[in-house]
Image (cartoon, rainbow, N blue to C red; front, side):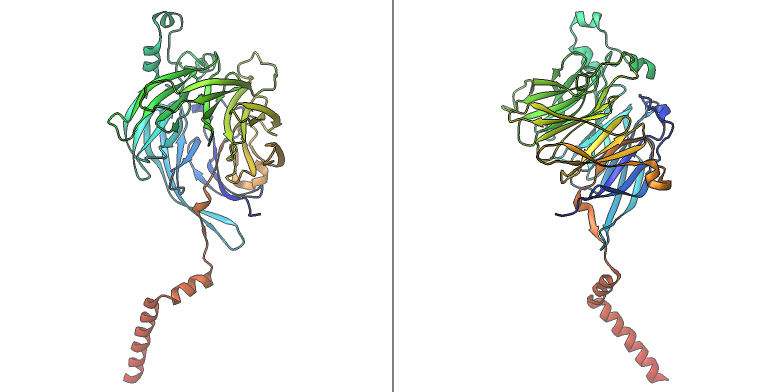
Length: 449
């Protein structure tokens, strides 16, 4: 079996004071940490200096370009553009070279920017999500460069427009004033959380509005993106992130506030018709019926949701209970609980499954560690391989991990040995021409003497 060998990036929080949430941690990170992941073993490589790199993503066709989102509520969000190269030597070890790090590549029109994705089909546009105000920015792309913003999607204005007169009186929508107000009133106004492209639509889960906003998506049209509908979820759910099944017409959303996953059937027929494209078919808890803490700062809050690449299992992390809930995907797309696995750390904010499906790596934000699990491909269960604490990485300064991202395999280049490089040079006819000219000049000098 081939090695499970990947370049792995881990984002970290470097400044707690400007976050919408407050990590329970006395150590802060240094930026984006780069590691070589190989068969469950993690080796540190280098660090990319960044300010609160909360979310990382690649360009859909150029894995050597990574977008790094700066999370903070004091200023509008900044998106960095990192270009890198990765090489593998004959022993199979990786090294990474950071070619460029444009820290002010693009700025959004909102605060606490928490998501950015380039449209994988057209690759001509990207959408950034601003959590604090509950908004989204549509950017034009020029290959891998983020150009000017073209449109601002204001969920506050949209939410007010969708309210009935009686709802506007009983439940007026408003902006939260500060971090404390935000924690006490999570759903008094919009808090867009992520963006997901699916065929002719874009779906944006909004925790504050307790719904998924549905937009029509047509890169060839003048409007490009246009609001169509909203999918309301169970009261108090708080939708956060989504994943889409590779073959079934089903999507799964993690609900931060209710510790649950909502399963949605997708209607993609008659794309030209204006209608709601999602219908709730199941709500299932992620918390194993554990008690709800009355203290809002100690409750469980769901974070990341992920799916095995073969579409057989769903995983969801619980911040508070500090577990990963494992579910089997049934034939109709609904979920069946498999197990609840401790994360061996505090606040599992994010995780990712390796591209070969063999491992899952989780980031425990408040205990400064990452944990590696081996996946059972048939049962979906997780077995601990190793927990990596800060001390395991020496003076790497590892702390407050908040995001995990594996680079695509095709970014890794074979490093040429000295002998190979010499052989390639000698195979070049131009090299022999130069050597011939040098020999002729030396011979002429000798004759003249």
